[in-house]
Image 1 (cartoon, rainbow, N blue to C red):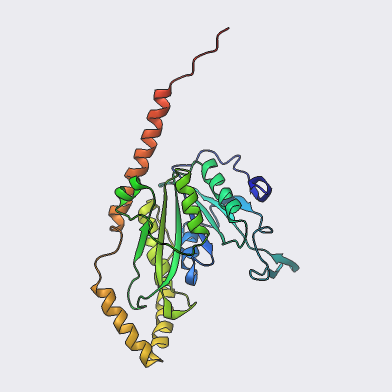
Image 2: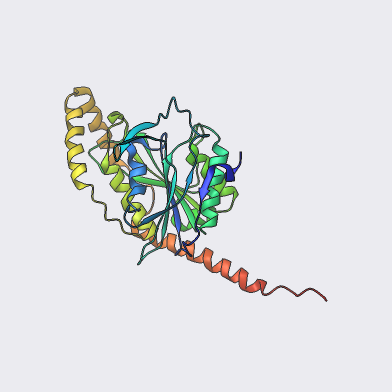
Length: 302
């Protein structure tokens, strides 16, 4: 099985994109509380985005784990399978965004990752940003921090990020990051913490934190407002903590530790955005210089 067998991709008629960056958010192991996929969705509009490709779900899932759903469309009964769609959002006053919003596959990860790389290259994406959310020992009463890493030493130096140091089991996002490194394509991993004691409850504060950082990094605004959801879920989270005396004490410990920590693990949003733009500009200028130096090829002798 190869990419051509599972990828339905047709960018014809799309035209050249403006400095595109790909965002990747996948339901599953790296999407606790749905915060990662919700953050990526904040940068594509159903009214203005274009679906340019999709990955056939059939080879990639154990459907006893990721079960399809029965839905009714116009009175007709249909089966809804796991989607993995590549969506292009053109932005008039900022860079274009290519988003992969889907579901982490169970099988054939290498082929899945090859499909992502193929689309990123075909659309001339300048970088790929994987977005994730993890369960962590943080309090729900504080704004969660967004942390980032990259295996690209130039990008790490430009953005003040760290090289990946995690060892252990990983998800498709980890495999994709390694493949991007091998392909010499700039890539960043951004992730946010979700209070681990909230189990699978939504945590819109984490979604909002990711959206803010992505907006700064990309230089792309987002009109998504989750303030009402934050207030509603904060009440739910407060009730969960108040109902258990030991949990309430634990939250106070987490608050103390959180407040003791230094500033966020990555630079401020404005600094990060400026440095990211400068890095991508330098990559583009270097590529243009190579093209100019190459010059026209020598003609063949008659």
